[in-house]
Image (cartoon, rainbow, N blue to C red):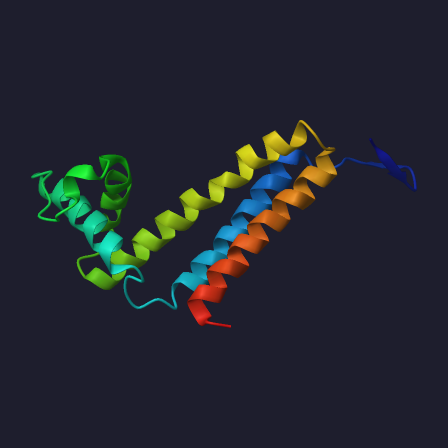
Length: 146
């Protein structure tokens, strides 16, 4: 639907642009909050996936963790990218958090397309935004203990 204002036609923002703006806004906020972490919050999983990622970079593809055989390698392969961001564990850990935020934020796109089948575009974006905001609020609750 085009709107006119004093002789000029105003084009609506395309849906893909709205989703991308929302994605970068939410991911930027989560990345900013992730810098409050000094180390892994869940030592069991974090160290296991990190050791597998480190072994992928080292070329051994073997981890010494007790449950390493039951862990699929895809997530560790993604985390292995973080070893290119610096030599120290703090920068590697923050790179892993950023990768997690970017991957977790992509739920925005399929969620919109599923909602779009039952709702209008505007309601689908509002519901999708609420889902992302609520998950961020839950993330902040565990981070800062409100």
